[in-house]
Length: 347
Image (cartoon, rainbow, N blue to C red; front, side):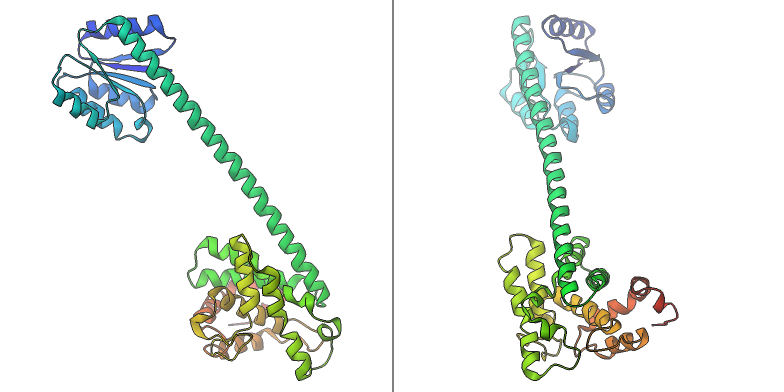
């Protein structure tokens, strides 16, 4: 532990220093001038400060107030050494941040007891702070580990869904990346963009409840089959409902609403405009764009130019215009995600 003594009297400094050294193992530093003491305390963290009340240039109350303004000294015990018994002086000192008082002339035994008690208090305080910091680091480490496991489970589940749907698994990865770029483009926070990136791969999780004959049908679906296929959004939302994490709650919103349309003609709830969750509006563009550019059992892949033109053409009808604008703004990065086939495209 380190003790700082501030007093304009050399004899008082010597006496107080000797008394403290005789009763503790603390390192003691003395300063004749309060300004010098403030400078020293910038480089050295003291655990207890004793300051004289009456000093030239800056008295003990002013010194205490200046020291308390520093974050590292907000809780350090400060003893005011004073011969002034006026209650107003003590109230002023307490308001400035003094912890305790020692009257002049002081009793060495009393001074030793007060110093010992406050150093013990400070030691416990430091130990508690260190423990709290350690616990904070452990919680952060555990949280990071849990988030990593949650992310791994999501990607593995999404990949399984894509394989069942006849894809290689790259579709969900591209949708997630494009959705994150669009979310950033419309001004969502980095944390929210990251959540959308992690939730987007589960947008079609409900397809696990759709029959293989419908999922893999090479031709156009009949109206009855289309109605069954559209049930995947409700199934997906039901699978993800009542999630305890923000990630799963976001995934539920996306699964439920990524087939809604800006003009209200989508499904399943015929939501329109900003009534559609923004997460679903973002993923809708990413999902449709990559689906257009991908070969499926029922269609050939569209040329990139044609797919981009379709996204533009559907602004204000199928898609949120702000999300389309963000898509176009982020096109160079989206182009890189889509691969070499887009190199000659000028969006």
